[in-house]
Image (cartoon, rainbow, N blue to C red; front, side, top):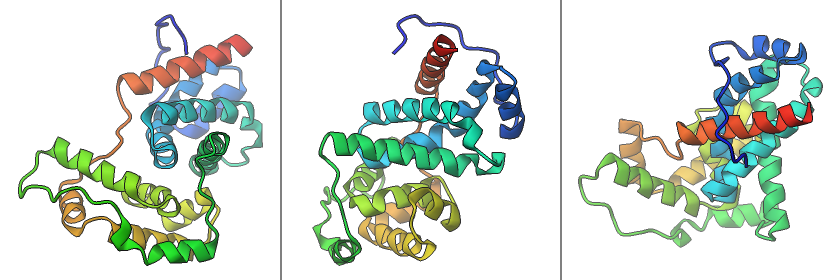
Length: 228
């Protein structure tokens, strides 16, 4: 982590990914700030859904952007950038779990067994009839964290990030039909009352804005400039 609070570059976030990539390939490292601001939120949610820890998720996002920058020449089409970054983030998060021996390997038969275990999901006490948005968001985040590993990232991508089935399948490396099944089961595992309320009011979970977004941008740019 950078110790000095270096000033952020002039914003490139108003540019599209394709224009930013052209500038990066032309030597404008600072233009990478635009890519990070466009995709920080989604990558944080992907990472957070796997490592279930804010600090670790931030580290994963930072690693993802550094790896992606180094491998940018591999990206064939700018339109493929979101899914490509998502795969890198997912792989980075899974690698962290493997190193810490926290990864639960699940074959398809094991997944099918989990599908029938909805009653085993830990449930806190029922919320009161009226909850402040902040309280409900925290409750929903707790429920999402309690989802089985096989479902958590699928739910985050589909329900929170509003990714298509095809994009989710590409990021996760699974079949679209499997995405549909896991997303459906994930929703069933969450309390209907909480989900209905969150759908109605648009509760956002694991938000990644302000100082956390700035921190990632600053740290990654510092590392890239140092290696230039």
